[in-house]
Image 1: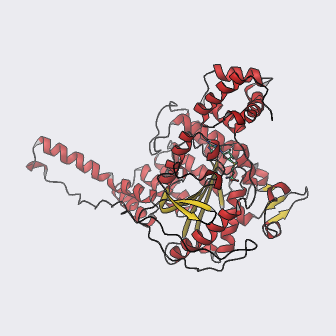
Image 2 (image 1 turned 60 degrees about the vertical axis):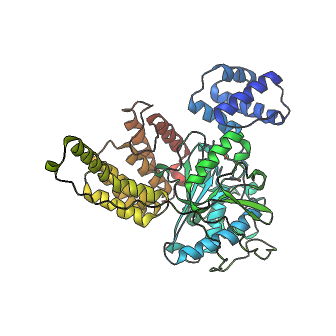
Length: 487
Ligand SMILES: C[S@@+](CC[C@H](N)C(=O)[O-])C[C@H]1O[C@@H](n2cnc3c(N)ncnc32)[C@H](O)[C@@H]1O
């Protein structure tokens, strides 16, 4: 679309949009900028694009307003099996090796489709795994898919698509994984739908990685066709967060047009024929590719898999602090200052098991995290925060029912524990129990009324009450209608 607004106005708007949303609109995209603002105008109660544009430049914009604006300015274009070369590398070079190394002990895999739009990318990954892992039921697979547009998320959770979403899909896809509906559209098989958890997250505003939104300890993050619309500064900040969200040796996959060693500088670029992927390198050794599962002919004319390229030499993994014996020195032998110090140390030590549990969980060392958390609970069974922490670890382990029990325990000890309600909402949503999810998100909002918006909530990694309320509203908006809920 050709822009019609004056250049001076568009230039000011593009600066405003860059600072408020992190989206980048150079002059060659001013037509898109104008079209997005025209689409946002009715949401802001303006009859035309120019009056809306003038208002945007003069009004103090709240975070929610920025989000509405950004959702109209961002592109939701997506389809099944998009960018097949990247998927082929993912399948043959990354997943096979990961599955092989994890098959012997902890059968778990965590993948994040970041900026998932209407869900085609996340379901593509679920389908790849379904074809690749014969004993899928024995595995704890997390596929998290996030976006900041509740309308996209709702459509994604419904899993119903028209022809256009299949424009570059392999021939077998619809027949094997979808059911044709009466209206001619295609509904994804419930088994695949249940493999993906859709959730709200804004890269610009939200805290991640965090146990509160299940964004820690990822093995693979796909963030394709998202960062190219961001300013360099915002994209770099997001890339830094992704780096921290990955386990050592984890992979970031962007689209070929987004590859940039400067932007993804904390990562080691790994070159494959026709694509560059980014790897978090610590304690990673180059391993020969071991094919443990049959490779199915997902892609016609598959070429022979190239050997794994060498990766950057290992860095030592961060050491785990040793457990210090928690014996109090007899107070009588201490001066007041020493006693004070000893008391402070003791109080500090009491917090250590839960800190260690968090550390381990953030790095995906879940068995250790669980042990630390059990120590914390044994030391103080009545602390609801310990039960909440246990629930986040159990959730990462895919033990949803026991996680729900732990959250109920936390709420029994503290009925106003807002984050426990929020976590219950997320867990029920991930299980397709949309009515229960709705009830817990509504409880979250009710409880948040007791907190000033700027208050930082306990156990929330810096999340404020105001932001949590916005997220809960967006999650409520993103829930599919009960009629389509997966029982
Ligand atoms: C072009 S789609 C990409 C979909 C998919 N990854 C793919 O490659 O097919 C970009 C998505 O990023 C989302 N997005 C843009 N800015 C975002 C932000 N700040 N936080 C979260 N999602 C964002 C948009 O809503 C949109 O759904």
